[in-house]
Image (cartoon, rainbow, N blue to C red):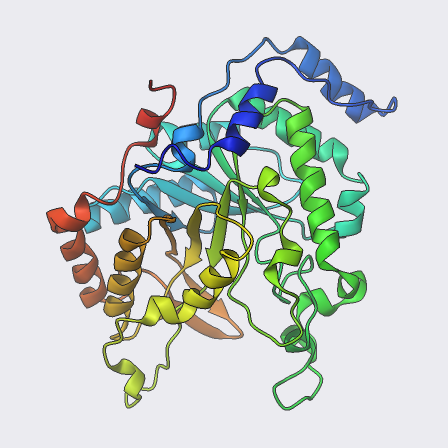
Length: 381
């Protein structure tokens, strides 16, 4: 049984959300005052109980999609039919400043998916977030999440230890090629441009804690907080612990990394490799265990469309089932274009990869370890 562990952060949030919390002095700001008034007018809500969702007995089967929430759900459902296995976690991406989409997220929940959002602070610096420059937007969003009263996995500023997002850490990997030449144009890491180049781990921690505190002050108890580092490696990237906001601010560790392969048909990488997953994630798992015991979910992964894709799938699923601290995975089930090149991460990009995926879950041994209806774990004594 795993459900009894890792519940402290959620329990604290639940305790804080049983009544209407003051959302702080809006300083007579019109937008802040409006949110305060809405809070006063909102009837008391008994929050949905998310504790068993934080550490369930079975593992999550997740998929990630671009575009709208509804289109992601429809694609996930169609893939579930092709794979003969319903999935129960759907991840989508949105820029900070968007309004929480209550209707689409509620539909997701009703259809058997735990909504999982990666919120991307594309505009504004980490220091500005920590200083409260975006508190009105945060309060508005938090209020809508509270009113929806459905579970939501929420990740702010994912992959913060990488150099490719403006909220990330600027390392030599983001500024220079392996030969030491300066990168230019789209090859230059976005964390190495303008004010983002000054991002420090403590800036991310302060921003995360501030965002979290706004939600708690608003009495929001239906959020699973997902801190999401990448497997990025570089000599000058600080230790992960420096980016960590603390156990009291986190429910899940949401790691991301990809099992990318050489596409040369003559490459030896086309041979079967049962260690693909561990080669990508084992160092990260080891480092995480030095400072936290929070449960881990693979918040984003995938592999390229080579013959090895089927074995990457096997490697991932076996690892997830074997590790007691691993709650499942989210597969980036998208074909996308990067630097003018199409990359097909989809699980059904090849007939043999889809067949392998189906065969795994047709086995009672593996089928019993993955997938469940999230709604059955809420408010269920």
